[in-house]
Image (cartoon, rainbow, N blue to C red; front, side):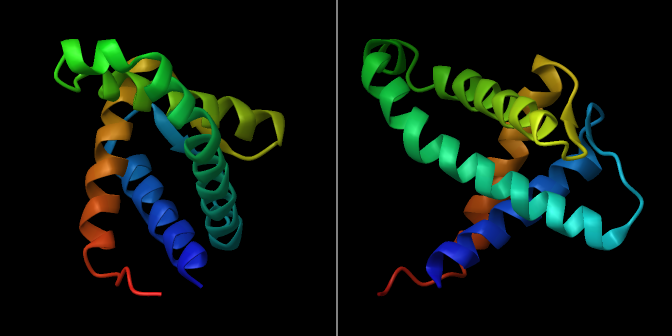
Length: 124
């Protein structure tokens, strides 16, 4: 159940990013298709974060320490761009146009996810 809640939270955070960041778009007018696309992209983001992010953090540990964690913003932006590429390959209407929209979108997704996760219990 917690996984479904986290997927929904990520989907909401992605939606907020599409609303506020020019360059991140959800190219459909059908509400049901928007919801399913956001949920699918949230799953893609979750899988990317589960498999690639730990490897990147391990290999780039020195960069994280040297930049006091600021390189994480760049990594998150690149991972959001990767999610957009995968979504495009799966014919999902979610697109990130370039690095800077991905950068600001990753910040928004991170902040909104953090805020919404404050309301979710970590108890099993």
